[in-house]
Image (cartoon, rainbow, N blue to C red; front, side, top):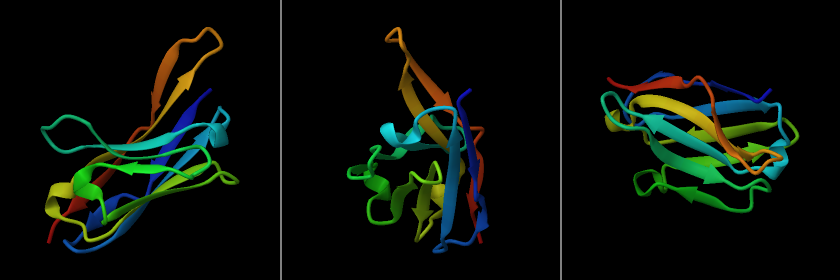
Length: 121
């Protein structure tokens, strides 16, 4: 079955960096766009960044442009999120997500369990 396992979260000071990883299994990783979302405390989940299957195209939320970089290693079935110049408002649970279409044409979203990122001095 589809599994997404995030890692790399933690406590970091403002201005610091973290790299999140999401290890995927159970589907053809290289053929699918991967996404990072986050959910700050008391707020709705929001899209952070996306990357196409080949890695040729990426997309970022405006507030993350220039600070965050999404990348992938299809040989390792892993997607990464490099986060630099972190701010307290980046504090959130970060999730990996993939949208798959089954053989009947139905769309299913699969989420990881999330990894906590806390930016605080």
